[in-house]
Length: 420
Image (cartoon, rainbow, N blue to C red; front, side):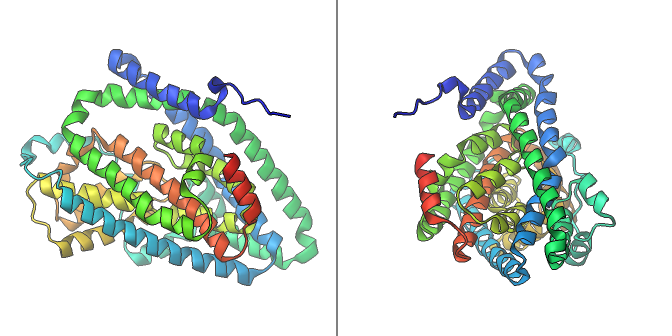
């Protein structure tokens, strides 16, 4: 019996792409209308954010408490952190090499006096760079409720791990609670499936607003930076993530095709949070053990910033080139290492990259902060690209750590990837 393919217009990927195209047209032809459509994207992201914290809690708790092997939990966490540090360091090097070779900002000779007003539009109040000691302190919430209300992924993750370990230690006495957690998790996934039907409308509104606010013409002068960054992202996927995937027995292209709806959605919304619940569900469906998904994916959202590393490398050096600021290799590495540390403070905060960049440049006094106004017109495009890479990197990391733990059903993985 031959199964019938559903019509193209019912495919979520097609719907989101159509929403993006229509959004661009509305933003260009009717900018006043496009500017008023921003709430469509904001409401969608808030609907996702509303349940992300609870989904992380339920996924981590159910995954760890079901295993009852706390040694395995620690082993998974250690392997994941080693993987994150190695791959993000490679991303940092690739980003630096690419921007220094292509030099998109050289020759611009920007007059900083014309840019002073631009920084006013950067919302840098949400995230503040801090030292390593304060970073560790901020991992611990003052209250569990506060962690959920603020949407701090790291704090939610810490509380979830502790709660899961305590539940696992109860043995059979904890089973009724574990069952409730599982029921709540399934309920939250139902909410996500309903909300996802609004994704095309959200992408339409977000892109219409971006195009209306900045206009296509304002993006053209910075086309070199956009082209350089997109090329760098493609190179990273090709020379880093593809070989890692191949070595672990699966195809990166097939994995990206499997998550195509989520990847297209992040291109439209520039929000990684908007797809976290779907990634959790699909990775489990791929055959990755629930405990691995529950530990690795939420941690990756805070520590495995492959695309963000590429973004910081490209933008900081571009701004130095554009403003004729002398920035040697040592200065570049030092500044970017600081940015990588301070970016952890923005975990869970949508759109924190530009804020982290602003406050870190102000603190280091290396590159003029006012120069950030140069990239405001293309930040949305750059953001969509680096969030795309972050999502692909997080999916690869989860499967890879699962393979290291021998916690992946390979037959199921290959069958699902082939089916797409």
